[in-house]
Image 1: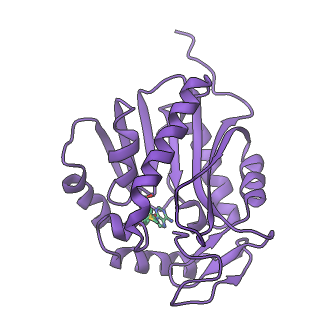
Image 2: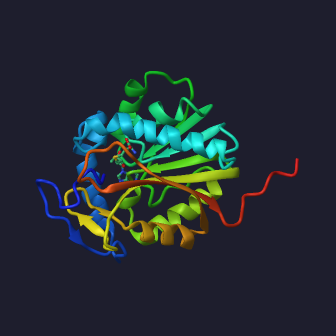
Length: 247
Ligand SMILES: C[S@@+](CC[C@H](N)C(=O)[O-])C[C@H]1O[C@@H](n2cnc3c(N)ncnc32)[C@H](O)[C@@H]1O
């Protein structure tokens, strides 16, 4: 997660490395090792900055309410939390709004911990353990697919394909939300410790466009300490909308 400061964290010097690489397996293995060892709590999900939790939840809730008010998010039956970890976003942002929330994460232990963290099965649908680079969401199911602090774990190519599969997972009039840290100065920054990239916003928007998405609404997260990467919440709709069933 891009909890780090713009100038790098205490353990590593981030480097400008392309997120378009031929053999991503080593990077994905690195991520798996990192996330299987992280603490299974809010602090672990937020890279040691548990104080981000409150403003993050408020910012996301405000964003979803704005999507509702603007007529962008029209239904709240089902949501999918991607890179859900222990279910921090599921519990605090999505469950209060959606009838049912599914979770997907690479790390089985984190998904298992979500039961205790969330504390109820009521409103929880399916839990998938799989990397987003291969995960295929169930088709035509979700009113919102929420992708927070995990898009940087995928290469450009895998993120593009994943977003294309997400489009197929949307219910008619569904929305994809990407909440992500973004770099300044047009350079993608690679983080060695957890094998992830912080992209400039323009790259994220280009990848979404390549996948067949168009911008519907955008906001910047406020209330975070100074010095962190800026965090954007971006809602996308498919360029070719998912059609309603005939029946
Ligand atoms: C920074 S945490 C964010 C967790 C959650 N989105 C939140 O905001 O609380 C990143 C999460 O992404 C998961 N993750 C990392 N790489 C992944 C991948 N390739 N596919 C699916 N999940 C991945 C990690 O296991 C971890 O739970």
